Image (cartoon, rainbow, N blue to C red):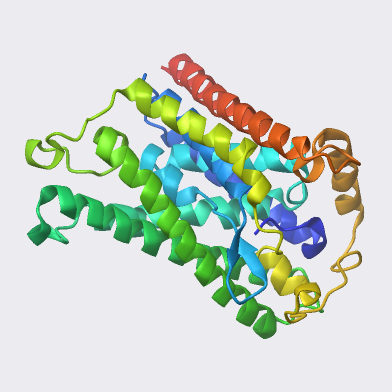
Length: 353
C-alpha cells in the first residue's frame, strides 16, 4: 500500500505530512520513558521483523494480486501505540529513502495510511478493549488469553487495513486524479485489502502467540496474574530477542526470494494483472499515470540519490544477492534507528526534567 508521488497533489501530500508529523510529535511527548532493558531490544527486533515482513508479498489466490503485512498492530501490541507508531515511521522512512519503496513526497500519506490506523485505532479501539475483556473465560485463563490475542489481531488487522485502503482512495480523489473515479477505485481497493488484512491478522497472531507463550510480559494488556501467567515464561528474554532477530534476518535475507511476483493490492487496483490472465482493473499505464509536479520531481531526484538498493536489489542488476543484502541491511538499519529514537527521547526527557 506504499503510494507513489504521482497519486498525490502537493497540497494533499503536505497536509498528510503535517498530520503524520503532528502525531509523531505527540507520540514522542507521550512516551512514558519506560525504555528499559526489555523494551529497548524488543523495539529494535520488532521493528526489524516488520521491515523484513513487508518484503514478503503473499499471493491472494484467484485474484492475480498479492499483499504484505503493514505491522502496525503487531508493533502496538508489543510496544504500545506511541512507540509502535514511531517504529513504523522508521520502517517506512528507511524503505522510502534507501530502497525507493513508496514516494518521498507521499511519505506522510504512507505513514498515516499504514501506521496511524494500525497503531492508534487498532490499539485503542480493538486490541486493548478485547484484551481487557472477559471473552472466552470459559476456556480457562491460558486458552482465553490466546483466543483474545487471535481475535484482536485478526479484527484489528482487517479493520485498520480497510481504513488505510479507504484513505488511499480518498487522498487520490482529493488530489484530483481524474482517471481514478472514487466509486470504482474504492470497489477494487476495499475487497482486496480485506483478504490481505485477514492474512496479516493470522501472521500477527502467530508472532504474538509465540511471544505470549515465552515472555507474556512483553505483550501489552495481557493478564499477568499468577493464574494466567503460570508456567509461560518458558524462555529467557535474551532467547526471545535473539529468536526474533534471527527471524527478521532469515525472513529478509532468505524468504524474501520466494515472495510473490504478483502486484500488491494498490498496484493491482491501478494496473491490473493482464499478463497473468487477470483483469486490467483501472488499466492505468505504469509508466505514465497520475499527476506530476515540481515537488514530486524534486522528491524523485532526492530518492534517486539516496536509494542505494532501489527496489530491494542492486541498481541495474538482477543478481539475487541484492535481495539478500537488502533484507539484512534494511533490518539492521531499522533496528539501529529504532534504538536511536529511544535514546534521543530519553535524552530530551532527562533534559526537560
